[in-house]
Picture 1 (cartoon, one colour):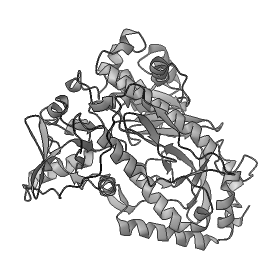
Picture 2: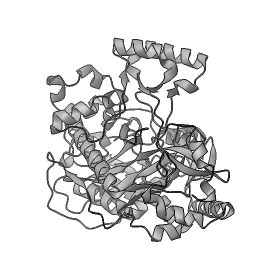
Picture 3: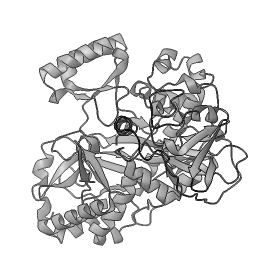
Picture 4: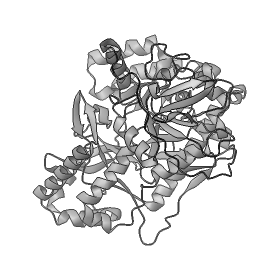
Length: 536
């Protein structure tokens, strides 16, 4: 073991977590041998200098995030998170299985609700979800696809088993950081990067564009695709810009689009151009002021009716948030069994449904031992970690749960796996999670190799979200000794197959007609842009 990790075994002993780089006996895991060899050849100042160079590169490229009102360089740690290819194949298959089942679930609950009829889930659980939208009930989506893009959050428990922590099939964010992390680490740790058989991530934009085009409305041979953003003040605006640029499509705001006769058009310098597919990066509540929030300045009046008429594809589909509901999450193993007649390949984290009296009573007695989460929360907001909470915080939580049991779930405190992380010129174990991203084109579910690893930069912290001060690691899926590197995908049996393969088409930049809005309207729009997309 190099001097860089001389104190690491002592730090590992302060936790029961599974460490990704070292065994409990402080033996290096084989997949990390190349990275370890390179780090052994460096001094702490060398490593710190490389980390600072990566941070400057992020700032130069505009890869930043907002933390407590301050714009910071995206925090990427120099030690990658490495997953052996054989293990990743199992993860990929499990993610694809889950996305396939959630796709079928959403198509069902916005149609005949057979899962309710057959007694698998209670109707009230679905209809009381904050993100179940009756406005989109009863009409199908092009190609039968609702979940075009998904991010399934995984954690590895103290036994080394991957578990699903939550599902993100509404507005999953963070894939831009996967692409930028790879670019940065290739320069920051080139000796290790060039010597490893790492599965690439660069094909994600091509896969995404292909999926969006293939799920265009029927009869459209050369679809126009756009990315719809809340605007420059949204924390994920960099991602919106990057993906639109890499796909070669227009990045638009709601004011760039207009609906007429149940069709959507984009204002361009050459006149209005019909739009066929909209990759929306704002929450449903802001999408259509005629259907949802009437005060929304970010959406497009009439866009839901255009989708209902089958004239535009909205990705991800409106109403997907019901599958993100953390109470629905507790039923996903049953959803998989019901629709696919298969056992889940990746288990859930054990979860208490607090609307059930017996579970609620037990949780009330154990609040100080558990993690309690709001069912419609995101970005780590609203969760309470019992062991870290004060007596007053626990009492306030108790009252909230008793007032609204449907709005909360509880889980045991998992010691998320750790990876060596450079903090203050010292390598220490920091807890990580993993968000693999999947793309569904109506025929197959393709899972991006690796995904986004988020890391809690404070020792002992279990909150990895960047919006709460977390950082990230590049995630390497590494094939060793000539192992099979083939992609793993899961066929989607319920989809309509498409025969055409369209070529890319780029339209002129959209322009804004309201370049001098009133101050009050501008302030309200800025606030909505901050709210309009889910945090990472």
